[in-house]
Image (tube, rainbow, N blue to C red; front, side, top):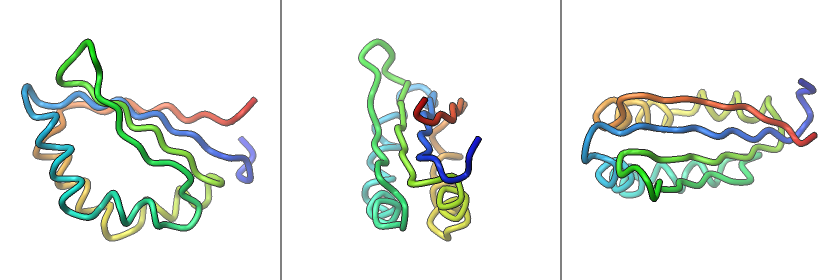
Length: 100
């Protein structure tokens, strides 16, 4: 993968039963989402709720390149997000993609 290519991440979260909305509310109210969207290189960071499964979320992220996404992962608010995920999320699956 060329480190200069735009990077798209698709993250599927399975929330603990009945906890999807609480997770989304905590992420929003903590200000983490706002901080991530303000980061250098963040082109998209958006959650989608599954229509079929009330405990499933999709996070779509787009970064200018892989290096800026790596820097994103070291930000202090990402440790806070990890703690929030620990309260509400039971599994995570990540797909990394670049434009063909």
